[in-house]
Image 1: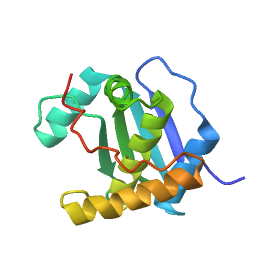
Image 2: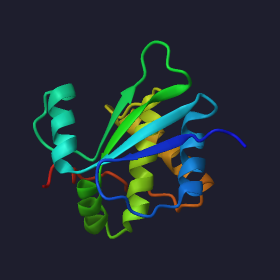
Image 3: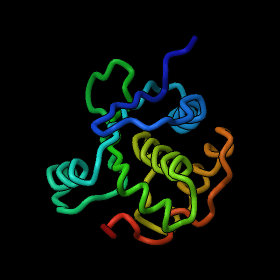
Length: 153
């Protein structure tokens, strides 16, 4: 059995998630590079991380922290706010699971060098997100993140 591509760490009450699908999703995004550790937190926790690491004092949906130096197979860390993910899922009319899948693959792609600063980068990243979502059994999402929902607390 291969080692997991995704390790979830809960700073909030855990919720049931389809771990097999999420493992496939992250493995698609990072290939055989190792694993991703994802902290599932709330708006307070992610706001603190956002302030400390990006000097932005507000909650966000997902933060990516690529590993530097020797990592023992760890590609990097993600931090994800379940509160923000719930709001975004409600605003977009999708399930929380579906929104979490999009956020996790988005963060994992940042860890392996994808960016979304320009329109061209966003299109390339969205295409890769949708490829991985489909490979993991999720419907592609053409309009994901077309509005800035993360800042609406």
